[in-house]
Length: 187
Image (cartoon, rainbow, N blue to C red; front, side):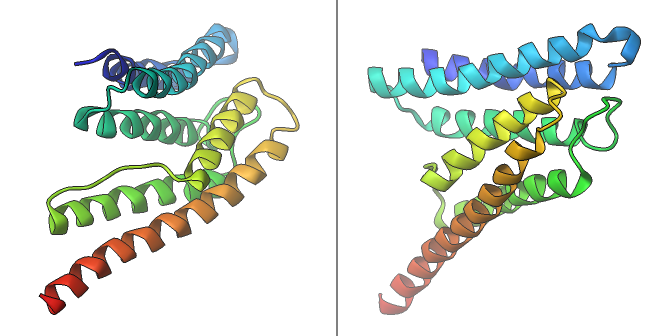
């Protein structure tokens, strides 16, 4: 296991602690919101760091292709779930925002599983829309954890990029599946 994969694994292992901070948060335990923010920011930094190290050291691996996006999805999905109307924080994501973010990720995960089942392999590469989406989603979570009253100025673009990237990933998935079908017919 290379250093980039260890960093991705750290991000995955931090998710339960992040969730616990949000679940047990109450106004009298305000430090838990701050701890959740620290854990989330460490996750954001680790996301950039593992990718940078993997590119710089040219140490891409099959495990890294799964661990890195898995870490992102787990951290972001848990943030949008536990910072939704169920949260005890004053400022939280509206249910529709969380629904859009989580639905897109579930569609991507299910699509990847279908492609893997059909193709017996999968190449996981983020697109520019996916990177923009992740960036705005991460900033949205930070704004909500900071209880910034104008957080909607960040989460609206996050929602727009989430929808655009979701459509883009679905189109790419269908192209991969149709290419497989066309090769089988032609062969």
